[in-house]
Amino acid sequence: EDWKVERHNAMKARLLEGNADLLFIGDSITQGWENGGKDVWDYYYAGRNAVNLGISGDRTFHVLWRLDDLDFSKVSPKLAVIMIGTNNRVLHNAAQIAEGVTAIVQNVRTKLPQTKVLLLGIFPRETAPDADYRVKMAEANKLLANLDDGQNVFFLDISEEFLNDDGILPEDIMPDALHPNT
Image (cartoon, rainbow, N blue to C red; front, side):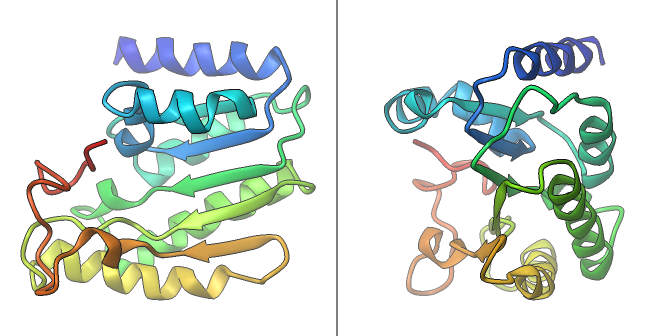
């Protein structure tokens, strides 16, 4: 899609400017920092030389392609925050999703070996705790937790923070049962 190509090219240009201490890599949830999450982004991250590398609709293979096409030679970020995988839910099983996310983490570590990685667990999706995609994302997160080496890659699953006591994903937290509100 044209808008995705334009966004990708803007990412390329931004990285060539240098001065990027914090990278956010992901899909629409990450890109959402520029829309509904803009005030929060501006308050917490803009002053930290943060760069948003999220594109709505991305799956793990899209991110891998983008990472290979981006030029990281002008940046030396301290941290890359990665949260990706929810859009793979239809095409892939939990192990395949975890394999794609693992490849992304390895790609970032290879291209930016000095950069620490905060790998966020894939957020819950769908309202009910036993919904198919919720179960699949939880299974993928269990596999992804193994990437945490306590030195360069850190895994953090905050899924429970979004849920009520019954494990339901409330509409006032994620109105569409996927994207968190501010």
